[in-house]
Image 1 (cartoon, rainbow, N blue to C red):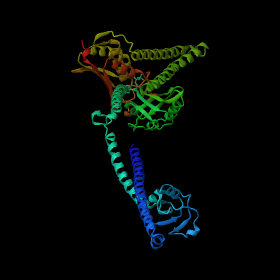
Image 2: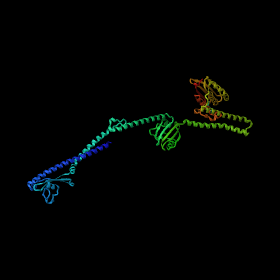
Image 3: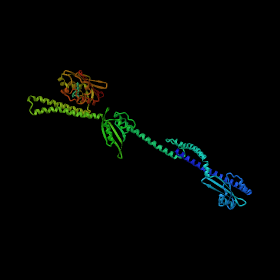
Image 4: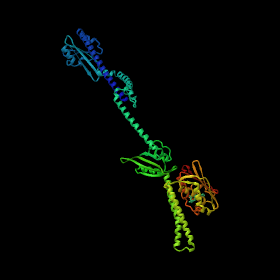
Length: 555
Ligand code: ADP
């Protein structure tokens, strides 16, 4: 805008100066020509008067300087010429000024010579004898006048151009300054050009609209952020060039990454091939999913392309923590394979023995011993199935809440009595100490807990060893402690004994009846009752299991 105003002012002032110069030159030239003509006229009259009085001698004796004087006879023949030989000059009667002078006494004319850019002005006067005195003078044409002053004109032009340029800069800046100083956010109509009022009004309306839209955008962004930040799952939105557009903190935390920088690529969050392939598939328009194993656990990645009018604009990625799900899946698979294995072993034995019996290979005196073997294996199967049933009931939380008041001391006493044959077989002595604590709970579950712990204290004890069941309480909890002085459990196994089918010494345990599910039932039973169980053991000295149950269930 400044440039346009500047150029406009310069053009206008240049044009104005040019017109002024032409106009002034014209006036001066006209004035100069009129004065020259008047001077020539008076000179002509004087010379004519002198010739009338003195005749040719005047002309011969006078120096006319630049002035050309010609004396022409009434017939038009040149009698005298101050510059040329009269004989060389032809008939002059046809010359305008001569013609006029012969006819009316005096006359004038002017002739322009483009070659010398000069103008010759003539004045002719008829004298008494009918002849004509003509005086001629040469003076500059308007063009020549201008050319002769060209240097000065150029100088004046340059000076005016400089001044105009300075003026134009100042003026254009002055005009533009208020426009440049307009506060676009808060345009003030009263402090600006009137001509700008419609524009500023539009600007104000536009600003209002933009700020309302911005508020709306900020509000919806904040809502989006609040919602996504409170999600447990990770959410990432990336554009078609993989640059992250939105990400919640769960996403980068679940991937074990740090908060990505603005505009970072989604690939910066995880460098594994699995993740890269999954994202690339989605970028290629295919919904894809994968499981990533990170230091924090297993993550399920679900990546979907975001399409509009057939074009992929970006992708939406959901990340879920599936560590527990994966572990449960592994446990389920292990459990199934363990169950199959544990069921197969006694059944194979039963099948083998019954096959021998059927084929009559067994001697009659051995039949009863083989029968015992079949019963023992069947017994093992029944125990295993009972344990699986108990465990699955606890797993599914399908045990009916038939709580009754149970005196833990009395129950422990009853269980020790139930296990007396087993204890006797191993010459293990059991002892019950403590107090009568009544707990309101499911009797079957608490029975299984104490039974399994006492059974283990006998089973895994050394022959002739002992165990103790102690029932006590602390302000908020009932405590059941089952300790024995058996061989104990090595530290590396202690953390795993509550796992399903986990047995410390498989070859030794094989000789001891058991399913590997006893302590799992204890653990889940205790959890069902809202308590905790822990095991402490000193190899060679014995093991202590401590069960803590919330006493608020006490009747
Ligand atoms: P099982 O049915 O084989 O007894 P458990 O789940 O009850 O299975 O026990 C798991 C393993 O923990 C056992 O195989 C045994 O090796 C070990 N264990 C359990 N209780 C004791 C204990 N009191 N003393 C030594 N080892 C024990």
